[in-house]
Length: 498
Ligand SMILES: [Zn+2]
Image (cartoon, rainbow, N blue to C red):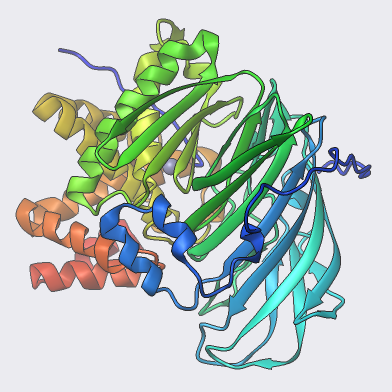
C-alpha cells in the first residue's frame, strides 16, 4: 500500500487604539469563588489529572499559580481581565524583579496593563522589546524559595487578521483564538530572564510549568473550549461563565466560536473532545480518532498522558497545527477530509498533523524546552514521535513511508549538513522546516541505530519521565542517553546537532 505523507510545518504590528467593550455585568457562579482558592490548596487541579499523575500536586512547590479572569466582549475580539499570580523564587540567588511577557503586543494585537501591584503596593513597571516584556520591580530582594503576590488588570485587542505568526492570536472566520493572551511570567535560566522577540517562523513561548485557575465570561451563544478541566459553568442573561482549573501546564489557551459542534469519546481515563463547524464533522471525527491512537501510542512509549481531557479545535490558522497544553488547534483548511488540500488528500494532512501536535503534549508541555533557542528538542523529537505513531499504526510500511517524507524534507536543502541544534532565528525559512523537522528526527533514528532499539527506547522513556514538568537542554538529553548506552555520543552529536 502506498501511503502519502504530507510535508508540513507546525509552529509549531498594527496597533489598534483600544476601546474597551465590557460584557454585561455578571455575577460569579454560585458557590465559593474559585479565584479566591488558597494558594496552597491544589485539590482543584486533581480532577484534570489522571490518577498516576496526581502525586505531582504535592511536588512542584515553586511553580507559579495564576488566578485569571477573562471577560470576552460581545464582539469577541476585545478581552479584559484580571490576573493575580503567586510567584516563588525558584533560583539560588535573590531576585529584584520579575518579567512578564505581553505577547499580544508582538502578535498583531495590543495588550495594556493597569493597577499593577506587588504585595498589595502599587508599582510602576518598565516595558521593553516592543512592549512585549514588562519588568516588575520588587521593593526588596526576593530571596530563594520566598514568594510574593503580583496583581494587575489587563486589556487585550485581538487582531482580526491572520497575518501575524500564523494567526495564533486572532478573531477570524467566527473563531476567537486566544493564545498567550494573559501576562505570562518569563523563564529565569542561565541567561537570566530569558525573553526575546521571536522570529517570524516558529513558536513564540518558553515557559515553566504553572497552575491556572481561570474564570471566563463570554456571550452565551458561543462554544468555549479551554485548556484544563471545567469546574463550573453558569449562565445569567446573555452571558455564560466558566471556571476552569489547569495544571501543571506551560500556557493557557482558549477558543470560542458560535459555529462549533462537538464530537467526543472517552478512552480509559481520558476524554477527547473535537470541535469544528457542522460541515467539518467528518474531519472532527477523524481528528478525534487519530488523537486517541496517538495518545495511546505515546503514553506507552514515553509517559502517561497527564490530563483527563484533550481538546482538538479547528481554527483558521495559517499553520497546519499548533500545540497548547491539553489542546491542539488544527487549521480548518484540512477538515474537508474527502477532498484534496494542495494536491494531497486532506485526510493525509489531518492524520500527520494531529499525530504531530498530539506528540507535543510530551515534547513541549510535559518536558519543556527553550522553543526559540533549542527548537529541535520539541520539534525534531515530536517528528520522531510521529514516526513512532506511523510505525505503531501501520507497521514497517508506515514507518518507512513517514521516514521517506522526512528524507524528502531534508533533500529539499540538498541534504545540507546544517546542524539540527541551532536557534530558530539562525535558520532561513526553508532551512528551518528542512533541518529541524526533516534532518532532526533522522538524528534520533541514527541515535537509535547507534544505541540499539531496546536501549534507545529505555532512554527516551527515562528522558520523558525524569524531565517531566522540567526544562530539557541538549546537554541533559545527551547525558541521559549516554547513561543508558554506557557510550560516548559526542561524535554523533557533533555530526548532527552542534
Ligand atoms: Zn510541532
